[in-house]
Length: 81
View 1: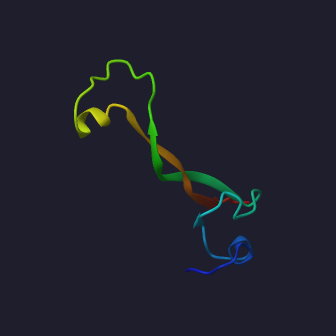
View 2: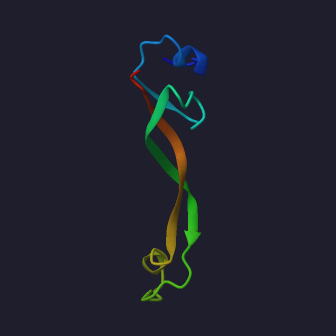
């Protein structure tokens, strides 16, 4: 179900698990974060990489590029009282 507010989910809902786009979406006392899903956030140049062979083309480029990631989705589980 989409377009639910945190209040709709936090109180008196039948849900046991929720996927949200914010770690602060639900009340910490009633819900526990059980998993965080990250996403691609760009590329970074890795400096001081030992053993990188300078090659022409993409093959040499992959040795100095690293993927940046950031948290995107949080999976919450209702705490049993």
